[in-house]
Structure formats: C-alpha cells, structure tokens
Length: 64
Image (cartoon, rainbow, N blue to C red; front, side, top):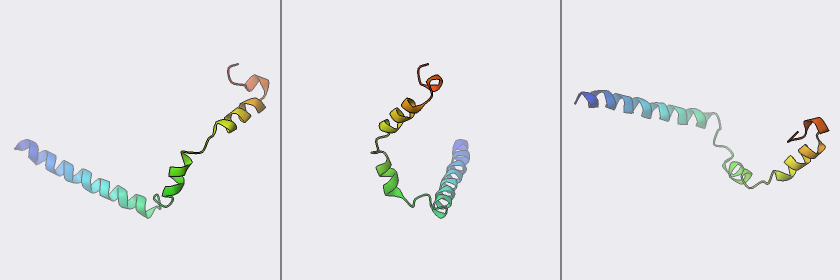
C-alpha cells in the first residue's frame, strides 16, 4: 500500500508533464508539416555525397 502512495502521484505528475509538453509543441507549430517529414525519408542523398567527396581537395578526401 505504501508503494501505491508513491506511484500514483508520480504517474499523475508524468501524465501532466506529458500533456504540458504536447500542448507546448502544439503551440510552437511542431506539427505543421507532417507530409514533408514523411516524404523526406524517400529523398536519395547518395548523389550529393559522391559529388561532395569528388570535389574535395586531395588532402580532404575520405580514406586519406
């Protein structure tokens, strides 16, 4: 029974903290562009990395 006296307020505090964090993120427009983040995964960045390494000076190339 003593454990419940400690765990219930802790659980309520964590729940209220999570609710506060959600409303804070909502107010700061963190959920504005949901489609952009989902489509960003599909962008292939390998071409950009190859160009960057190839255009680097010889002393800056990867593997040297």
